Image 1 (spheres, rainbow, N blue to C red):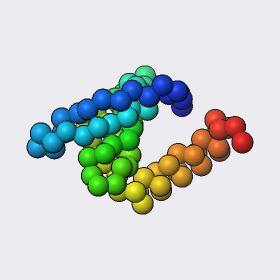
Image 2: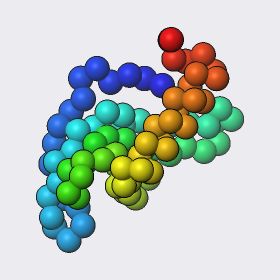
Image 3: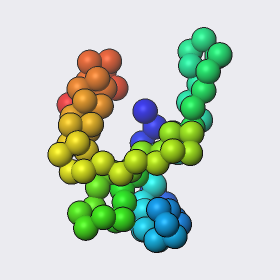
Length: 89
């Protein structure tokens, strides 16, 4: 996983023309190891709803997680990263 040490901040027009401020931390086209499939993945923070949370966009489809789901997502990513030795302890 590439760490984005300089996240970009911008405003997106989403969901019925309401604007949301976002901070993008990851935006890459990810290719399958077999080089047959790929997806465009963007991850960041969103202020669209009352509570700031994590948004994910996959191939142009965006979801904004509630805080409980965001915590579960982050815990899962950290755990798999630790399993593979990608996270220094």
